[in-house]
Image: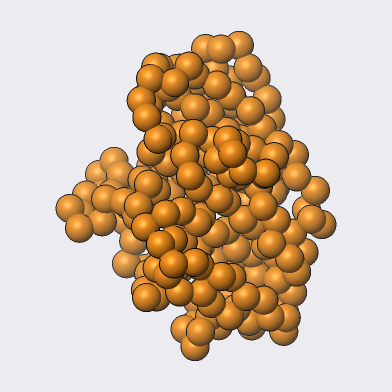
Length: 231
């Protein structure tokens, strides 16, 4: 089963310094029929103005992944971590029993990032932080496995049976993504335009895949994120 989600039908917020597209119910956007997709609870496509950001705030019992599309994201937390990541890099925080953190755009250019929340496989983990500075070339015309479970083989490991892949597919190129029986995946067309199993996707659109793989053709150079998990 495939289902395209047009970004124009997603939740939206404009706070001036922060402009967001909500893939699932979040903040002022609430749709009881759009709370989550499996263990995927949040994807917020955030654009943050220079010199602004999210002040110190709490989280608990959530696996939080930040993926930078453009600009630079500076993270600080109550565990003593302070790090900056840039385009194509991944930041991971297991909120566990509770953590405070902040996220800022300290640069002079806008920051675009995907903020992603995954339900953990159980509550009460000890809070943890990590990041990985992936080389952009690693995802050119091939899937880059960025995030997996603790039993998986991706560089970033989370407390859930999920896999994150990114890809930059050059114009005219094609690639497939397989989804096994008992598995599902959520694809985000971050940049560019593509045709996927006959469906046209624009930048910021999404596609649900349940036990069905896809063939992707880049109508223009395209940037994707796929989150794969059990049904």
